[in-house]
Image (tube, rainbow, N blue to C red; front, side, top):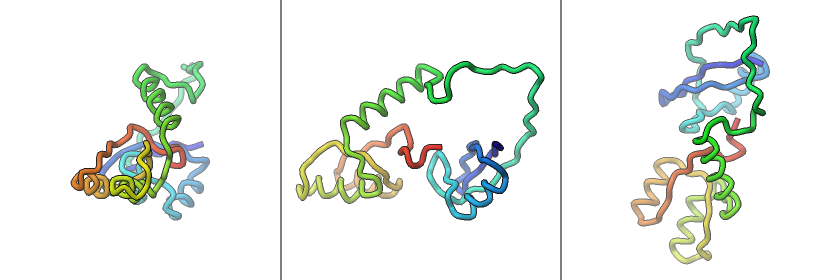
Length: 141
């Protein structure tokens, strides 16, 4: 495994792990490496410092899937509640929200994906939306 510091075309910096340098290159060329902040796929490796491990290991005994802090636990709980009580409509979120607003489909709790410009347009049209503090499962690393 290799960890890269990455930077997107919008200037966001984030880290991600890859199976190998070749795996990163293959995914990046295919447009499958996306910014964890804004979702754009124009990313490049940022300047990185070498990672040197000491002989002593400071292993954390928590499993990787367990929330590490109270804030992460709260976000995990919010996510569980939203996923349990809402329908995931994916990239159809904007269209589905508009259909509900116009009365073309029954109102219900939905969540999905929208670009910033699309979300702003929904708000300007009087359609209530709010960003969620997590990525959809298909985009989570």
